[in-house]
Length: 202
View (cartoon, rainbow, N blue to C red):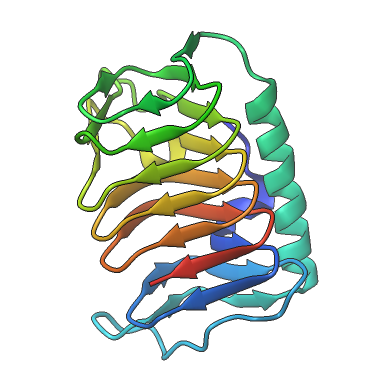
């Protein structure tokens, strides 16, 4: 897998800011590594919106977590074993994929249908998706796990922004070179690392 180090404690980590339109429930820490703009949450008590973790506004913990996330991203970008090159603009919708490294020369998108990740009964199976520019979804699209696939072993690396439309369901650890945006009604099982600017929760 990919070692996240101290970044593993974070559900959301951004560089400049995290914004939340309200109603989000987050399990794990949240922080910023340069800015101090973070939402104010009510005490976590589902279904009351809140944060089941700690806020780290540009403190030593957040700065160390960002360094760990960058190290993990460097590892992801250096990998080539079991690589499947999918081409330029890659549509992931409607596919069922086995463990491995999947790369694009441009964008990846989840628009034409849902994506199923099948671990083949291997609980340690790793899925890596790497693209030099954007990753985006259409509304209501889902990443579906099968065969024991685990969100902690799924990694998405977008060179620029990652944008998730309304009511989509994402799985895994998301790294974006700039911003990460979740529209209203999204569900994300994993972590979000916006290593350039902000993370927006709607």
